[in-house]
Image 1 (cartoon, rainbow over the protein chains, first blue to last red):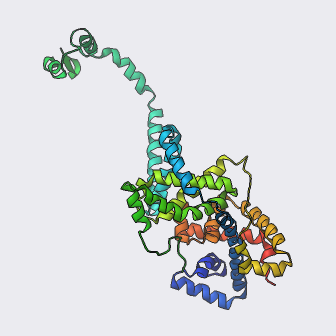
Image 2: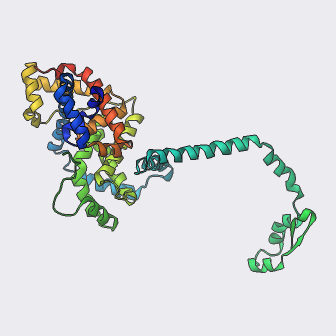
Image 3: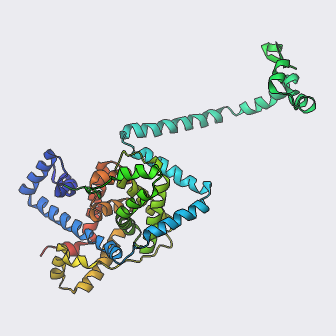
Length: 188
Length: 201
């Protein structure tokens, strides 16, 4: 282990959370290299110095900041029951939570990023496919008038004579036959 | 060995309180609030540097946690899940309010006077307690604000909240290696910014 790499493990070494093998390597460097030892001591002092920040929050806690916290929480709960947040306002946070859950679940990074890559590939593929077939929707529009008139007339039949007729009665009256170009015709 | 905020104690575990809450016993959730409000507040406070905003955000974090308790699957500790909600909420708040963010810091608690490093600094700086506290607070906050959001959160969770790397990784949604690396680079920056307080005499 190089002295530079050892500094990555200082925090865990200090707290005794390193595995035995890595801890032994760090210990060896600390004992043999005065510069690593000095870096370790500075790092420990820095960590203690930043740790003083916790006395700020403690001061507020001591000052009775939380005396009414629970009552306030219950009041907010009741307010939310009476005036729930509109659904659309919750959409961004729901999306964010879903994405964060996805990246925090204990699966390997490879699996997670492969999933994202696959999703992106599908989106890109679909967009390329639709942009390379611009005539699809125009063709559908051109073919629409050619649809069988018997099918086109279905709403008229419903509106004029059969609006109260049960669906299974209507279906019994439907005849199917094969029309031009092998298409199935539905005749009432 | 370090550990997270949940310390062994008599009575139901956090997961049992969660189950009781989901079964309709809302008082069970009050126990979780009482247990974690101080710690959640501390994390949020150190991210936003404003005690009134931190109080509101802590309330909102608990409300969010309560509403989405059904999605807590018990794969991680309850506090890790709760911290994640609170940290993300605080970071989003900071991003939204970037332009108008004010700072309202609290004074240090008297407990700081018994802290080893503070006692050493009093001797080293030859300053009165009050002057040192005020200077130190300003310098610490300025230095932390100079870090990027992702580096600052890791420093707060590690050095202020004393959470282990594994828990920090789950809270911020990255690997332990990334936490190690972010902490290392954040410490390098902070060493330069706080050099005066790091000299050993």
